[in-house]
Length: 117
Image 1: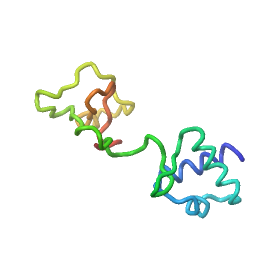
Image 2: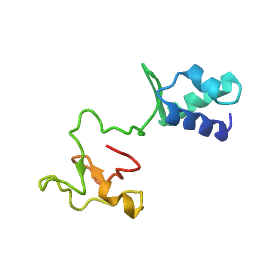
Image 3: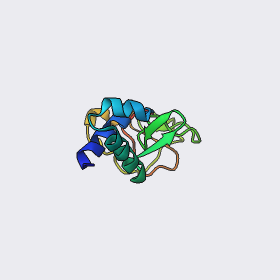
């Protein structure tokens, strides 16, 4: 199994997840056993996980976790929720700054255009 195959499998799961193993095999060009081995290698590396709905990429959800409150918007924090001293988001597009948000207890701002709450 090549690293390239793992990257292809990971890209498919990130783009289409949750997705079944059979659907990953159908999407990625390669032998079934190699594609499934790449999927298991991604799981072992903590990049994907198996859920009842199918394979899902780890840490790529576009929704805030359900056990947290709503994020705080940087442009309109309503006075009380302003999170001062947080690190800048990875996205450096100045046009996106008014959409930044953060979860309570966060250490960095999240770009609201690239990753909407």
